[in-house]
Image (cartoon, rainbow over all chains, first blue to last red):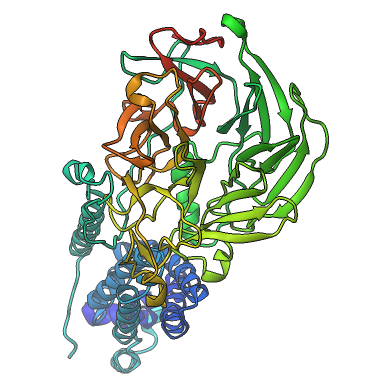
Length: 162
Length: 459
């Protein structure tokens, strides 16, 4: 029963990443939060307040889209059992959640005035979030090998049978 | 083959709830950093107690929503005084000036639209709007001629189409008005109740596009050769960059004949209420200090302003207490910074200052010294300010604790009014501009030596 479910619609073994709305939305925080680290580093180097302004806008947009992606993720997670059951699904979701929460905290840190908006807490959080996003990417990466293995086990005509 | 770290929906929701609770707790902790009454009591006078600065996730804040004065309601004074409405139906009255014939000028203004440079500006706009700070001003000056012996006051629109006017001063037949971005000159004859002349620009003042602390106080030297303008900083603590602070956070001295300007004193974050101390003839000013490093930091102050002095902003406060939010730091400037004379308490937001004199009709205990209008700030819980205090002076120096003169602007948690600019009228009574209350209040001795107030709405 278990292996049948997996083999019939193998695309769904991609987990949350297979959900197109989520997959689209989650790119925004990924790019924004990575950008925040870069603009924070630029601030550290130049002490020009404009870089801090870039950071806080990137964080704000990233957090808004992370919230929307989170809604898409929860809907998918609750309504589709298979996205919960792929390997590392829980670890992936938890890592993303922690990254999003730290980014919300980071947005408040970056809303301080002056140097303490970035150094040291803001910059540290920006770096931690990027590391978490890299880990999440690994955890949520499509396990192609696994999909192929399932396909080898089941005949292709099972798809038609459903 | 793969470890199954299976999170059920319930478990995920639970994890989310725990994380949410942690964030809420962090916010709660910062928002619950209440100002300490004992510490507040130790923050008046020459040597205020200064706690360690803190950084916040969310700075402690409390904003009083706007209430309205009902017919017959007024702020509260003690039994030796009486209070009445001097002028009502105004549109955000901010500052007051008495002409030599006893006519009172009232600027009705609020700041120019603040640009949104950071997401925070959007949120602060909403928060301060809740406290009435975003109300539209009329960009005009209204003249009130007090009626003699209880006759009704005459109230006329004196000067229109200004741009966030605040400071006013008359030298001879020249009436100077400090807009948020320019110093203007208008012809005035004694007894005028309206000026229709377009006026001429004397000099541009530091203005937009940000113009964060926009109120430009104005004062003329006794001989009329110099004008002094208080210019506030363009930020809380240079978060808009140092370039935005050119010629700001200082008192400018302008030569009236040539229009040449120089920085008279610097490092004053938001100086207002420029006044001459009557015995020593020294320049005094009230200053709003910086925000977001604690409910009991930094005390706002009243100080004499020395020619060429540097008072710290942004690099340090209260002398040489370094503000680490400013990078790069300037130890060379911090070394020059001098401490102000008299702390008024943290976040009281003094915007009005007027000296009384020994000849005043006010009660004996309020003659030698200065009244200070404390507008109140969003950055402290519980709120502080929202009152008018009297600072007794002796020999041209503050002597003693500030005394509450007018309170009761806060009713429950609502602000029915917020005091701003002050003036003494011809009878020696105190006038108070109440911006969100759209009223000018008159406070006089209860004994009845002064003529009865004339405007309606008095209790």
